[in-house]
Amino acid sequence: MATSQHEIARRRTFAIISHPDAGKTTLTEKLLLFGGAIQLAGTVKGRKSARHATSDWMELEKSRGISVTSSVMQFPYDGRIVNLLDTPGHEDFSEDTYRTLTAVDSALMVIDSAKGVEDRTIKLMEVCRLRDTPIMTFVNKLDREGREPLELLDEIERVLTIRCAPVTWPIGSGRRFKGVYHLIENSVHFYAPAHGGRVPEGKVIHGLDNPFLDEVLGEQAAELRQEIELMKGAAETFSREAYLAGTQTPVFFGSAINNFGVKELLDAFVVHAPGPRAREADARQVEPTEEKFSGFVFKIQANMDPKHRDRIAFLRITSGRYEKGMRLFQVRTQRDMQVMNALTFMANERERVEEAYAGDIIGLHNHGTIQIGDTFTEGEALKFGGIPYFAPELFRRVLLADPMRMKALQKGLDQLSEEGATQVFRPLSGNDLVLGAVGVLQFDVVAWRLKHEYGVECRYEAVDVATARWIEGDDAKVRDFRRQYEARLALDRAGHLVYLAPSTVNLNVTMERWPDIRFRATREH
Ligand code: GDP
Image (cartoon, rainbow, N blue to C red; front, side, top):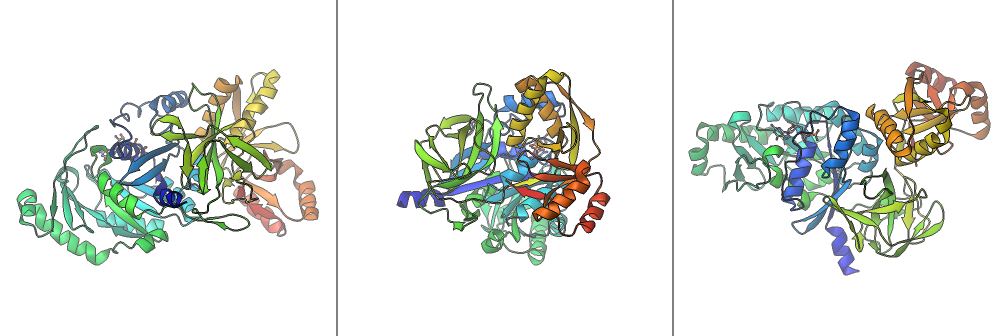
């Protein structure tokens, strides 16, 4: 038991959120590099040009191996076990990203110093807010001319409504970028650009009044002292309580591609980021240190590795310990399952785990019996909530090239929607299949996978749907509503009634007309 407590307390499970191109992939690789999980960073090269073509993208996802194919990367650092959960790295953020954020204890936000807060970041922050997830911030690309740091912090505070507490502060930027000043340690870390896999031995000196500073920085030393003075007047100091409550974000500056500022970030991260947090289930709150195992499935992914053509259900352990061969109780089906071969994802290899603890993610082989949102326990009938489906914002009708392949299409869509790659709606009238997605690339991925994994060719057609809402209410009311709106209603994969609105105006009018019906923008698994 004592070892379990220790193991659980040293877990750090997080995800990186950012707008595309801010440097999430680069930072991921550098974190793995500092964590000793890979020897050489530098696999980012050459993938940008091909990024927009879907088929290339799929191939790329497969071939890159480090941060995209591996959904979970675990590495030890400074006495802790770090679990970094990857979120899809492409232009379109998808529901997968949202759901992954329900499985972490904290997040790392990457901001491009020249671009500041961008729209994808805003959306992802909204999702983090649902659970008050603590956020650390890394302002990246200081080796380029960027915006004034104070101005950036101001923008983060204004747009994301979270207070900023700088932990490191940049010394110049672009060609004048000389390093960072560490406010907590009162030390200056000099910048030594180092591309690729070499961890630089950047020089560190103590104290802002250190004469060595003037020697190295020249006139920039005085500037720095002045700026720090100014900044201390304007910004908050770091408070671990405020950070853990999700009201303050500690901010670090650096250049991921040059390995700079990343170690300072990681050092602070493992110390301050929360370990596994308690989680609400329907009946009670579950503490991570409880002796009995519990966990929930937040993601299902197929065919990750061409050598293992299986589907993997990703389970976040919420309490206790997993041990190879353990019997787990699947609450939804009330069935026991003996788990001999759960997987973990050390850097880019899949390895059998003998044991895992609260905070860890394990991969269960899924033969169609596990769903997103499933809770597993050692027998208690618990149900974790909070793994939502989000109402899609984009819709397409699916057209089949060969009508004889209908069965295969249905099977494919069923499995792909089970994974959360898309949502499938069957209108009550007619034989259409309507797909819903949050990001437009999801459609391309689904078509590509239907073709390559299920041998089904399909096209898409525009459909007169702007947004969707799950319908709830008492039976009689829902029956009335259903009679009147038959043409605009559909069933989702699980058989729930969904209103497909042709416009938001239509949705608002309908909602006003039917005050007794609940129109839900999210539905829990
Ligand atoms: P992602 O889309 O957020 O995963 O971003 P990437 O990690 O792929 O980075 C986007 C682009 O920015 C790539 O061309 C990187 O080489 C580049 N990049 C990443 N970090 C830095 C940095 O610190 N400085 C500069 N100048 N470029 C960077």
